Length: 58
Image 1: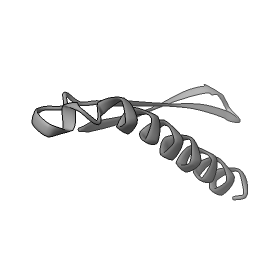
Image 2: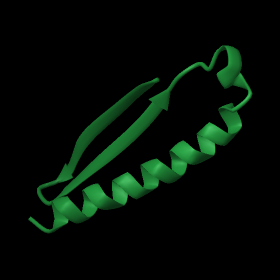
Image 3: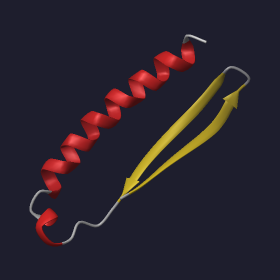
Image 4: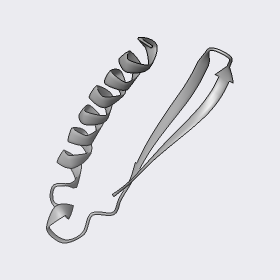
């Protein structure tokens, strides 16, 4: 699994963060790939909300 974060300045007060997860399941994990994708989306959403709160409260 590879996770990439990209930060792009939009203007002096706004930054866009893009998150991309890549991975190719193999063997036993192929069976759980759809479930894992859903779980990862939920975890990423939660993490991004936390990151946003931390950055905006500075």
